[in-house]
Image 1: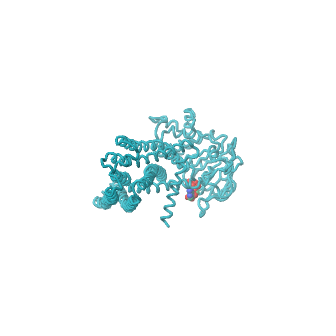
Image 2 (image 1 turned 90 degrees about the vertical axis):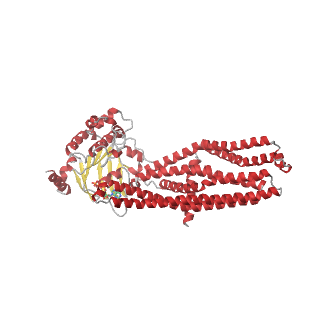
Image 3 (image 1 turned 120 degrees about the vertical axis):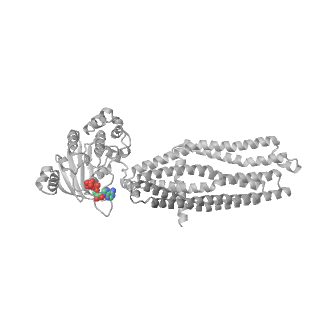
Length: 599
Ligand code: ATP
C-alpha cells in the first residue's frame, strides 16, 4: 500500500512539472520542446545506425563471397560506408547537442518560473504558516526543490527517456537483422542489470544516510565542544570530549568503508551481468556466422550494439539514487505550493478611490486556535486625526488588534471597517497600502540605513529621507556615522541598538505616508527622554491620520484622544486620560503603579 502511494505521488510530482515544460501561454517554447524531441529522435536513430554502418563496412571489406550480400544490398563501396559510419556518429553527437541547446532555455525558464511561483506563494501564505516554519528551512526547500527539478530534467529527459527510445530502436533493429532470441537476451540482461542496480543502490542509500548522520553528529559534537571550550577546561574533560568525538567518527569510518565496499560490489556485479549478456549474444552470433546465417560484420556489429546500449547503464545506480532524492525534494516544494492561502481577496474587491482613514472594530471575536479565545467583543472606532491608545497587561491581545487590522488573520466574528467598508471586501494590497505599522521589534534588511528607510517608499528622494529621519530623531546619529546613510546594518539590523532600529522603523513608516498609523510599542526601546522628543516631533505628522498607539508606558499616551484598556481580550475601560483617572478603575491603578515605579 505504501509503495503504491509512493509511486502515485511520484507520478503526481512529475505531473506537476508538466505545465512548466509545456507552457500554455508560450508557443515559442512549445516549438522548442518539439524541435528538441525531433532532434532526440534523429540522434537516437543515428546512434542505432552507427553499428549498422559498421556491419556493412566490415562486410564490404570481407573477401569472402558470402559476405558481399549486405554491402551489395545498399549498393555502396566500403569507403562510402565508412564515411557514412562517421556521419552517423557525428549526427548522433550533433543532434544530441542540438537538443540540449534548444531545450536548455525551456528548462532554465521552467526552473526560474517554479522558483518564482514558490517564492511568491510563500510570501502570500498566512503569518501563521511563517511563524511555525524555520525560514532557513523554507529557503532550503526551494533551493533543493529547484535543484531536484534541474536534475530530473537533465537525467530523466536527457538520459532515461533517450535510453528507452534507443532500446526500442535497437529491439527493432535486432528483430530485423538478427532474431527474437537476441532481443530476449538484451532485455533479460537489462532487466537483471536494472534490478540488481536498484537493489544494491537501495542498500547503499541506507548506508549513505548512516554516513551522513555520523558526519553531522561528529560535526555538531566538535562545534559544541569547541564553543564550550571553557566549560571543558573547568571540568578537565578534554579526554571525554575526544572520546565522544571519536565515537561519532568511528561510525563515519564504518559507514564509509561500507559505502566503498558496496560500490565495488555494485560495479563488479554490474560487470558480471553485462559480460554474461554480451558473451551470450556473441556465442549466438558466432554460431550464426559458422552456420552461414550471419555475416562477420553482423558478429562485430552485435558487440558494438550491446556495448553502446549497456555502457550508459553504468550510471544507473547514481541516477536512480539522485532521482529518488530529487523526487523527494520536489515533493517538499510542491507541498508548499499546495498550502492554502487562507486569506484571499474577493473576486470583485471594492477599490476605495480616496481614503480618510476611519477605523471601526465591530464586536470583534478572535482566536488563533479554537482552544483559546484571544479577543472578545472588541468594539471601538478611530476618526481621522484622532489618536487612539491601547493599553493593558502583557498578552492581553493588544498586538493582535493590529494584526487583524492589517489582515494577517481574519476575525472569527464581528467585523473591521475602514471608511465604512469591511476590510474583507478590500484588495489586500490596497488595504496594506494605507496602513503603516511600526512593530514592536523592527527587523531590518541586511543593507544600508538608507536602503532600509527608503524601503517605505521606493521613489523617495534624498530630501524626503532626510525629512523623516529628522522626524524620527535619527538624523544626527546617521550623520555622525563615518559612512552615513551608506552604513550597512548587519543581519536583521543587529549592528544597530534596539532604539536606533526602532527609529529606522518609524522613519520608513513615515516615508510610506499612510492614512492609518499603527504604533505597536514603537518607542519602547528608547529612553524616556528620547521617547518624549520623538513623540513631540511626531505629533504634527499625525495630523490628518488615524493613529493607533499601543503602549506600556502610560506617560506616552496620556495626550491621546481616546484610550482603551484591554484585559484578557476584552475592552474593560474606554475614555480620555482624565476621564479614566476619574473612573478610578484599572487604568487608574496602572497609572499610579507606573508613577510609583518612576519615583
Ligand atoms: P505584549 O504587551 O506582551 O506585546 P499583547 O497584548 O500585544 O502582549 P498579543 O501579542 O496580542 O499580546 O498576544 C495575545 C495572546 O495571543 C498571547 O497570549 C499570545 O501568547 C497569543 N498569541 C499571539 N500570537 C499567537 C499565534 N500566532 N498563535 C497562537 N497564539 C498567539
